[in-house]
Image 1 (cartoon, rainbow, N blue to C red):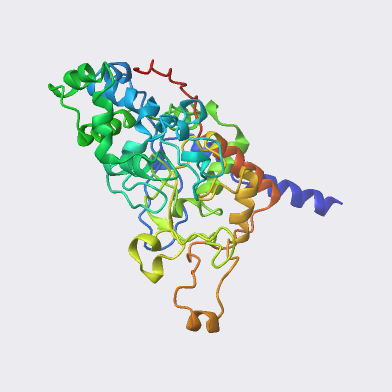
Image 2: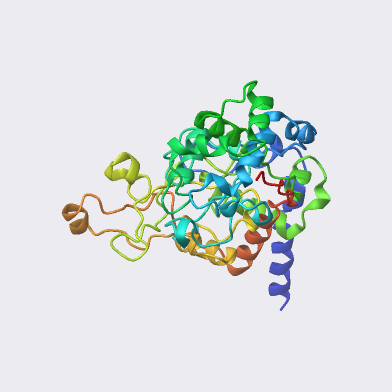
Length: 361
């Protein structure tokens, strides 16, 4: 009994004090465990946008906001950009996959627009390089807004009030498709996450995180291997990975980036989403099949290697998807999973529920 008691005391004495290690500037934090060759970035806090209301009063942003919420941008006059990117639903739609024209379902989960101005590419497969290019995708897609681009400007010219908005924004009443896309992009750039408890913690208010959440922070940076893909201010590497959810030759099959590049090595790769406001943006993954954040962590804990091909399958099918080598079993305990999830929850801030403008008739 004495020996057992002594060992217990020793373990407690040598147990790391995570609060002491992390209650200091980020440059003094323990370095994360990342794989060789990974270009990771240290975490940064979000600044409070003190110019937000001034930005929202700019004529091009006012126009973009009106267009964003106007269902007349769709062929049916029933669907707006905000139908899938609802400000009351963290600029997503809380569905597994999008629902658009004629109640047609899309194939992928609607990404939130939070911090979209910081993205390097757009859509799950990165097929758009700019916000303007991204904006025209849903407008013209048959299963989304189903609007012919050549007819949109002519349609809006018939709506009283848009001529004044375009005059204010561009110095001319001329309405063009290019100006529509530019205004939509300008408005979307204003959609930013609010500061979270984690931001306050980084900035020195170390009371914002509990001991369990700080342990989760350490796990995020080390044993859980999260920082291989989720680092920096927005918790994303802006890259593409096959995390084992391709469902190759099964229901829900989606080849991801391969559909754009046609390269075998890109089969099943999808863009790494930001973890900012992640607790507001579920369900998760490119197909929206996962609605429990602990379940998502459990999948990563398993290593995500659900359909690794055999050597014979590789030889027979060069397009058989290969799960990213970054996906490895984590061996997290149940308690560690609870701590990790508790930390992830600190990345979500208060939602700002924007008022919808009165639509022009």
